Image 1 (tube, rainbow, N blue to C red):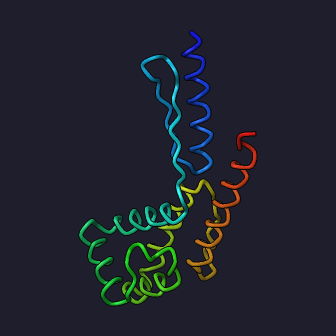
Image 2 (cartoon, one colour):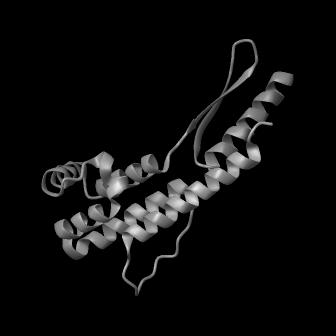
Image 3 (cartoon, rainbow, N blue to C red):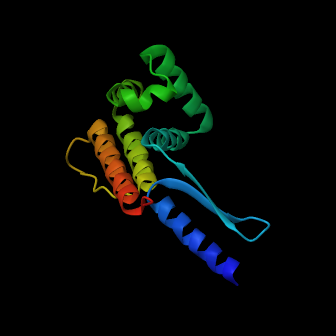
Length: 154
């Protein structure tokens, strides 16, 4: 009974960590002691996952072709995208023209799902992809820092 209560508590903590942008799982050792595994997600990883998902919406082979073009034509490797976000957006526009906007919007939506932030997308204004990514990054860091401050051990 005590072990079940401790496991419930570990699961609640894991859920709170997940909402704060961390990876967390709770398991029970064979002797009844709950274990909590925690790993920080960094924003760059979340951004790359969102980019992968956005480009995969086209199709898997298209995603690989786009990464090939980015690296060989624009000198932007997949891992460099978070640090070259403006160059990435420019490259998408050169590859897709006006078709880049829906891809950027999809990437932003996926990123916001991962970060846990909702952004209202302007329908009549020009979408500035790099600004949305910067805002999502700030939100992620603020949320992560707030959680770490409130829940840090004494």
